[in-house]
Image: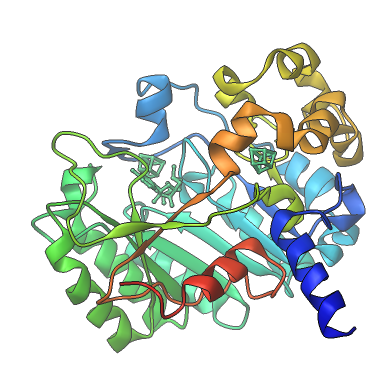
Length: 351
Ligand SMILES: C[S@@+](CC[C@H](N)C(=O)[O-])C[C@H]1O[C@@H](n2cnc3c(N)ncnc32)[C@H](O)[C@@H]1O
Ligand code: SF4
Ligand code: SF4
């Protein structure tokens, strides 16, 4: 490729002209799983509180749906990454968590796997065993710790800093790989460097992020700002070749398009949304991805309001300031991925 062709290719990439219109089941690299709506604590601005006033039904994604429809031996072989996070619950509260972990080891020893958790549940011994189990795999746990003794529980209501630290350290000391996610507010921003220092000492990946909402009592920090990716609409489904499955079994392009966020749908999406056609309790993964709702949403993303709202000129929660630049994100190493591109672009430019 000569320089001119390279330049044209770069421009096409930047504005998204080279992107596929949709994705099919054989393309999937990344499965984003919300396996439960259970949680043992009540974070002040959790989606459960913001969207559902703290009241949502307790649902666990059927382990048989996970094993037989999503993480089958054959399908999992093609997946590169699975993240168990969720919108309304904590994966470590999942009813069949131990069985699920055994299953991952059985069918997905090659995976980049991560569980995102508040880390305050279960006994220390459970975390030690988890560290021993994860030691030999590319498996990770992200702990949400937003400060220290005096600040952490202000947001993570019902959690206890010392308990979470004990669990994280037990997990690490047993060989587990950890991420410390730190949501920055005005009342804990002075503690970010101290947390980062602890991470350096213990070989923990530090992930400072901004809150998706600031309000009274949970103010915006002064010295930090949000990552920002200007330009084209960056569809996670297309860029990362990903799908999202929630605790009810609904398969959607991403967490934003999940039926829980129905208030953002346009008329056509509302019309096409037949929940049963995307419900993995009833249909196969291929059938759900072939549903009118899924296909319409991904294909028309450039014209759909919710897609622009969430994914255009996309805000990234990764925080940046001149003292502590965002670290290289291990999930998105591929040069072609949106987050990889973003990190490359901002490297050295954060003031
Ligand atoms: C709903 S939680 C589910 C996973 C797990 N329960 C947890 O808290 O880590 C999904 C993600 O949102 C993050 N989160 C919670 N409150 C947030 C906020 N106000 N701003 C940005 N992210 C937030 C959590 O730390 C987690 O990474
Ligand atoms: S730990 Fe996660 S799911 Fe639980 S309340 Fe906090 S943000 Fe929500
Ligand atoms: S909201 Fe739209 S553009 Fe964003 S990831 Fe979901 S489908 Fe793609």
